[in-house]
Image (cartoon, rainbow, N blue to C red; front, side):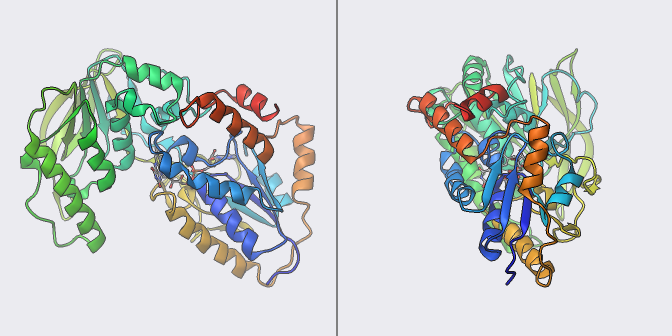
Length: 440
Ligand SMILES: Cc1cc2nc3c(=O)[nH]c(=O)nc-3n(C[C@H](O)[C@H](O)[C@H](O)COP(=O)(O)OP(=O)(O)OC[C@H]3O[C@@H](n4cnc5c(N)ncnc54)[C@H](O)[C@@H]3O)c2cc1C
């Protein structure tokens, strides 16, 4: 057990940052832990990614708040590493530096027409409806009848579901006011959820898929000929289980037929790879190539077809965003690391370490594993007498950075909950109004 207090800095107050702060707080008692975030608000994608109508998932934030309110732990919001403080300054100040910056930069489709108007990445679109400062002003074009969502993960389903829900069904969500207004006015009739591979390879989960069966204005459409009879032997047991359950739900959707009383149809389209977006200045049509899947691999057929698409949202994954000095693996879009080790004294955890996969609890196991590495590395080393928060506070004061601490976040939280008037909260979406609320 290390006796001397260590100075720990964590870049990113999302789930991974919070889990690792909790683990290190327990295993290195007495250490001083500073958790930085570029936003004035903590919790990363729990606040800014998780769908606003999945409030139960967001309850994990209460656990993270308990971590942040512990002795020796500080939240320092509204501090963008790379802009307000440099990586080198943090390395000089802390014995242990954790990089837990997540991954929110959209991966690109890489097809012609991608830069037309009304084509968005899911990161952009989610940041808009979830009110992430900087993302809230997107004003996506939702003025047509047909929306195509490319991707077969839960993010694609989140977006399709939110577009399909009525205002009444969104009443208990914390969907931002600007997005509620835009969705209510959107004349959408068709939503396409498009997978490059088959239904067996889809990574969305059954609970999320089943929700479409309960939406009051949504009719679901699946072409039965796209559903395989059985599950491929080469799949792992976990994959088989998921595929079987998803297939069961898709079969009920396929058997349903037309539901004429519903104003929106959600089409699940498989084995269709996007090859081009066509339109004059804005998206109008999505060209797709038929594929088939063999041993988990996608094989192109050369045969194309197209669907009308007034708005296109690609939900095909994310990359992390680097800052000067940070060792970065550009090919994979993650922080360069070996099992979480970045360089002496610097570690990465969560989505920026392993890529944008896994739900919130998956980051707990990951953070605990990295905490174990840190314990091994620091078993024989005492603190190098680094200054920790004191030097950082002086730098921030000199640069006039307005810090939001944990008490500031609590004030923001209270203001948002009060403004919700029965809804879970009405988010403040401008940096300036967040800072004002924090200082109230
Ligand atoms: C749209 C969407 C919906 C999801 N829905 C669910 C769900 O319903 N259930 C579920 O369990 N999981 C869900 N997930 C997955 C879950 O959000 C992730 O597993 C988890 O958030 C990853 O945690 P993280 O801490 O690694 O990254 P993040 O949550 O992204 O946290 C990273 C933090 O680092 C901060 N940061 C980044 N750069 C800097 C910088 N330069 N300086 C300072 N701070 C910085 C960011 O502001 C952010 O707060 C969803 C993900 C997405 C994208």
